[in-house]
Image: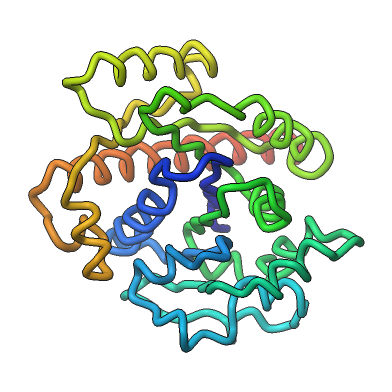
Length: 268
C-alpha cells in the first residue's frame, strides 16, 4: 500500500510545489512506483512537470466533482515510474468543488482506494489555502509535510492550519503525522537561523525534519525548462538537499511500515 505525503501551507511562496515536484522525481528515479497529484487549481506542479495546461480537460478537480468511477483514465505517465493526476486553472471546477455539501472531504479517498496498491508512494500538492481540495488531501495522507520558508511571516496563520489538521485527525484520519520542512534557507543570514529556531520551538524538534532546503537560483531555472533541479543539475547543492530529503522520507516510510506491522501483529 502506498505511503501518502501531502504538502500544505496556507501561506504561498514557501516552495511547496518545488519540493513536491523534485521529490516525485527522486522517488521515481529510485524505482518507486510514484503518483503525483496536483490539487492546486493553478496547476503549477503539472506545468513544472511539462504538462500543457491549455490542453487539459481531465483534471484532478474535474475528477472530484464528477465522481467518475475510473481514476486511471485521468492519470498520465510523465516520467518512467511517475504518474501524474494533473490540474489546470478552472475556476468553475474549483467553485463546484467548494459548493459540494455531502461528504466532500472524502471524495479523493474514494477515488484513490482502488489504485493505492499500484503505487509505493503518493505525493499531493495542495493550494495555498484551506480549500476543499486541501481537506481532501489531508484526509487521505499518512504524513502531512508543512514547508516553512525562512521569512519573518513564516509562522503567521500556522495556528489555524494546525487546528484544521487536528480536526481532520479527530474525525477522519487519527494516524496523520505532521512533519515540518525548512525551505529557502540562507545559512549566511542570521534571520534565517532565528526563524529555524522559532520553528523548532513552535512545533518541537521531533516534528522538524533534519533536512533543510537552501535558496538556490538553479531551482527557478530548472522550472523554466519544465524539469526538476534534480534532473537538470545533478551536482548542485539543491540536488544534494532534495536527495537528502528523499532519503530522510524513505526512513520515515520504513519506520511507519514497521510500526503498522507491529500494530497488526498485536491485533491478530
